[in-house]
Length: 423
Image (cartoon, rainbow, N blue to C red; front, side):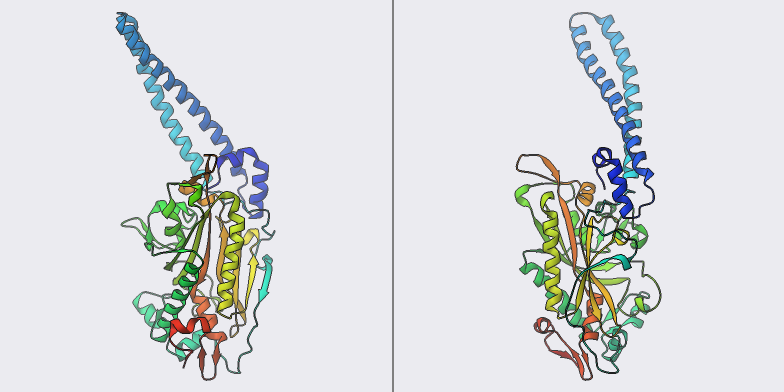
């Protein structure tokens, strides 16, 4: 959530940055400022009336002590009237505060100045491309055929158990999935990230804290009886570890990693984009999250991008890094880099990671603050990245490493998988 001071200090700049994200309701900025002005007036009226009550209460005691009972009784009568006024002011103030907050949460985060101008994914900027795109043998297959041939994933039984988009991994397919997640976690913890196993359901406050509510409620599975949400990513529970927390500057940076299943109702469009593992309702992902000083978040963003790049390089996959344009960014992000790997059998790029800086957007919602060296309270900055999302990594690995005799396993995964190939 944006801070009201940011809007009031430079409303024109805020509108300019929101326009980069193609946000249509720019008039909301002026409406929020007007509501906040009204709220401030109500606060003054409340404070002034409360001050009169406090002063009168002291005066009543003095009058009673000096035997001026009649004057004291008159002042008591005045206080009774003022208390009714205070109650009205308090109710009006509460309603105005809710209106301001309800309006503020409709505003996306402001994109930083590095964000490319553009509206569609085609306008994202290719920052870097590396790795050799493999030339496959004649008759090479996409992963949805390979998983049937090698009996790795069973979509039909998954659909019987739950529904479409819930894959059932089995045998060596399950073992490869486990090997990937274990390797990713080890890679992250070796870089100083502390591992967590978070709850896979969160309450409304947690979903609100990281920006899933009220923006993405339709994309999450909702357990209505308890008002819990199945997590769309480990980012939600892990970042919320520090909700309603005041940290010390010496506590930062906080580096966390977690493996979790992820649940998303929206499965996207039809066609090859959603075939096989390209887009599913349940998938596994390893996440990295950092909470840092506000002055260091973009330096940390570069470090996290480099970390994910090294991880993908270790898997020997061709990849590219994209700087997302304003129109393709998430609601909460200030700057995002996407990683895509090349799927040789599908002959297309598949997104496997997003690394984002949210600045103070999430921490303002979560009330996660720290005291700097001068003792001043500041909102921390939060960042997160996929390290990595498994389905498309899985798809690309088996497609790019297929041979006529089997599927080769990258060297870094062989100790985890226990073999150098699936045959």
